[in-house]
Amino acid sequence: MIERLLAPLRSVWESLIERLLFLPPFPETIDSLALFSLLLVVGLLIGEWLHAHLRWPKVIGYVLAGIVFGPSALGWISIEALAQARPIADAALGLLMMEVGRRLDLSWLHRNPELLRSTLADISLSFALIFAFALWLVGLSPAWAAATAAVTMASAPAVVLLTIEESRAQGQVTERIILHTAISSAASFIAFAFVLGVVHAELSEDWLNAVVHPLWVVAGAVLIGGLGAWLALLIARALPKRSLAQVFVLVASALLAVGIARMLAVPVFLTLFLMGVLLAARDRRQTLRYTDLPEGHWLLAIVLFVIVGASLPWQEFTWLAGLQALGLLLVRAAAKAAALAWSGGSLPLPKRLLVGVGIQPLSATAVFMAYEIAGLYPEVGRSALALPLFAAAMMELLGPALCRLALGRSGECGAGEKGGIA
Image 1: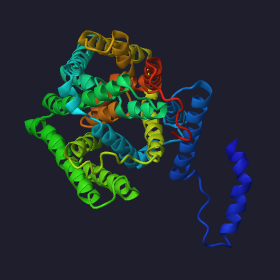
Image 2 (image 1 turned 180 degrees about the vertical axis):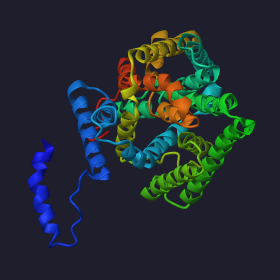
Image 3 (image 1 turned 30 degrees about the vertical axis):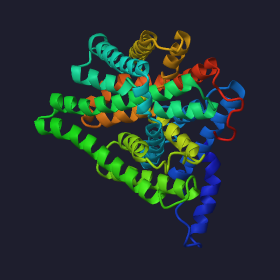
Image 4 (image 1 turned 90 degrees about the vertical axis):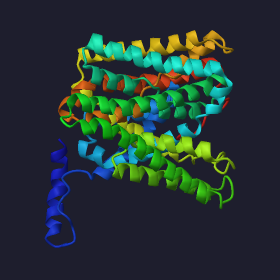
């Protein structure tokens, strides 16, 4: 059909080439950058339509666009185009992870033992139950069961942060959702580094990989994140507070950290999260305390979630894999709800359970972590980590809605939501 429509244009073009020497050969395919840009616009429009007509979080629309136009469905976004867009996705996830790290308030945990109790219960119970499910019910090896637990135990920081910003939510439930998400992400990253060594110990012929790789990841993330934080604070102190120049320095330092992390094969999400934590801890003069990212980071969020949606392996989906992923999500949800209910404290039980609902999202960070681990041994890892990838695929669509539901039921959503793309 398309070939018949293009045939007259092709013949005219080829006849012009004989006279106009500067013309390139007739393009057989659309340039990947042009196609990807069009799909980002489509993702934006889908997200806006779903939000305006169904009150769904816009993130769902972005993910749907990636799924529909990615390799698993129409194939308009090729695997090669995804590889070319990966640096942009790393930058987008990195900036969002830096914001989550900056919001990690450890002093609040110190002042409120009940919060420390609930976060520790969430972390330990989620990891233990997911590990047991993957090991005994799914039949994964201990190393890959631990990898599954490390990847899926935490909430999705990017989804939680963007959903809260979109809803203009403020209050106790909102703050605890952010705190639980940040702490569980930190614990998940520690487990991730440990699991790297476990996977190497099970599959590598050289024991040095099992020892050095986790150290390389952790030390590299700390050093690169520390360098980015030091550089941002050093330059920002000479600039007016909350100025555009400070925003530029913050973003530029973060992107520098992203680039160095990619060069040295250090996970970007871990590096930028630590950069955010170090920024908050070292900023004693509150130089960047009130300097926020510009609204444009929502544009990067569209890129991130379109790419994540397109990266999900729906073409490998089976009913058995789907049931196993659903079982994992139910176990994970029960662990988080039980941890929040058991922890007690001053917050009423219904609101604690709403916090448990709000921290259910599982998204970009889990997908990136899964591919990072699977890439170590592609012949084994891709199939072994299909379980967390399919769980993340399901929660890509359900997670933002659950977080939005928790914020709405808590009564903490703002009177007016952000317009435009936010």
